[in-house]
Image (cartoon, rainbow, N blue to C red; front, side):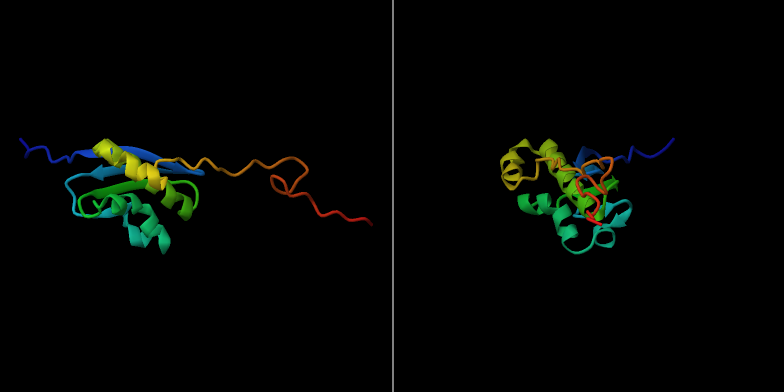
Length: 135
């Protein structure tokens, strides 16, 4: 009927930061291609965010051995970049658990749990009160 199954095996993980969520697929038989929401990393992120997003691969020296496909949503570009870094780190652990000490030492496995504090009634933001006027 059809040709052989052409699906590639990948390691899947989710990374989070603030309200950004990155779904990462790490293909072990790749050549170093990185796509974020169907675009090249340089087209989606800018400046330091590009290097930050693929920092785990550079750290373990496997930048040209993997293809990375990421679906990222929520938050801003910086938080999305951090979420992608977290997801790539976790996917690398599924590929090779021996990399844990390197990734953990750099803090790539820690989920940065700081999120925006909710707004309180009577205040402008979470803690910013309206300006006081004596008269």
